[in-house]
Each structure stands twice: as structure tokens, then as C-alpha cells.
Length: 184
Image 1 (cartoon, helix red, strand yellow):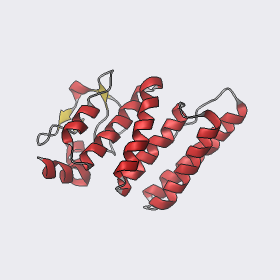
Image 2 (cartoon, helix red, strand yellow):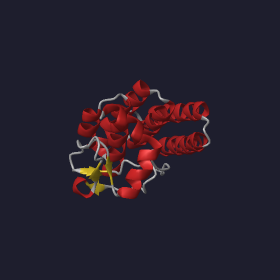
Image 3 (cartoon, one colour):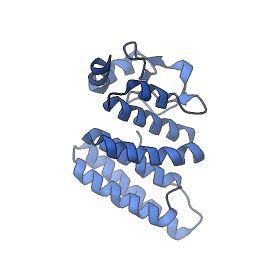
Image 4 (spheres, helix red, strand yellow):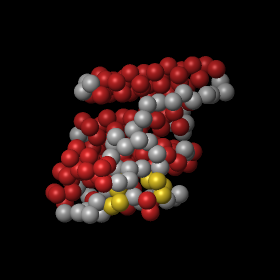
């Protein structure tokens, strides 16, 4: 849901590799915005390999790449691949944080369950953040967290959550209508 920030590592070599990988992730995001999903996937996978070699699986920077791949695979309709990447991102983000990153990955996994037709599981996943924080279900909503009491649930399925009517309407037209109508 956002571009990649730089993360400082104590080992200068690892830090340089992670910085290089972050630049590759940003290039991948640019390709994705242009509709070049195959090129984006190739770059995200390159960045992921670099991060795994430099800092390992349990680093927040690796989780960023896994979340980005999950988002990309969702766009591509590769639901199983999206779920795999997002679950790996969540396992790190729930332990290490930050809380916003965990909430983003949980929302993305909720969208995976919507695509699978399981709105009950989508709701459960979205509500599972231990700090009771969530992000708006509209992908283009500015990146921030909300206390779950601040969000509106979709009146049809009660599975998707939004910060306001404008975001709900935008996501309805862009994405959610397909899943909500099919399952309600």
C-alpha cells in the first residue's frame, strides 16, 4: 500500500544489499502501476532473494517484499501465491511490527479470502490484529491505522471495513462489489 522506506542495518554490507533491494522493489511497484505484472514479479523476486541472503526471513525488510508480492499476486489473480506470501509477511510483521505494516498485510490477506469466496474468514482475518487496529479496505486510502471502532463495515457482507463512505464507494466500484454480491 505504500512505497518502500529505507531500513538501517548494523552490518554495512547487509545495509547496502537491503538498500539495493529496496530500490528494486520500488522499480517493481512502478512496473505494476504501468500494468507490467510479469516484469514487476521478476523484480520483486530479485529483491526478495537479495533480502533473504542479506538479512534472512525474519526481518521486516523481507516482510515488505513478501507483502508486495502478495499484493501483486492478488492483482494477477494468483490467489494461492498471494496467500503464501502474505502469511509469511504476517508472521514477521505481527512479531516485529510496525503495527501499521501488520494491519496492511492482514487487510491484504482478507482480500485473498474475499477472492476465495470466504467472507467469514476475510472478516476474521481483518479483525485479528492484537492491538485492535486496522487499515481502510480501500487500497488508495492514505496509509494510516484506525481503531476498529472507527471503521464502517460493509452493510452487505460485514466483511470489509472502511474509514468513510467515500472510501467504501471507491472500493465497491473497483473491487469489493464482485465478491460481496457473489457471496451475500
